[in-house]
Image 1: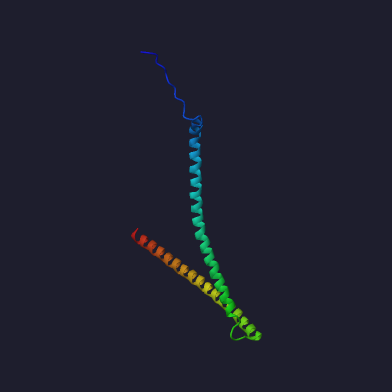
Image 2: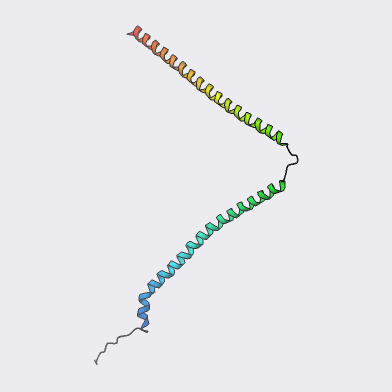
Length: 138
């Protein structure tokens, strides 16, 4: 056989070797960009819902303000003397309700103390009866 020669094939382009080394880095960057946009969309979706709720609350507040402005002044006007009398009556009612609450609390505590004393007396009598029975038996 004649001379056998070895043929070495060079890459198609000198840039192919460079591209093969950078290919995985380019793929990683593309995947990171896609992940970034997916996360961004998820955040925007959550924020959009919350912003819609806030807008709805703002609309409710504006409607309430409009309703309050529409009411204006009442149909009748109370004289300042009458308002002062109403205010005094309200203060007296508040003071009376405070006194009533204090008395109820005091009564509840006294009843509780009385119940505890009765229970303690009953238990003492039971202990005495048990001791008497033990003396009779023993």
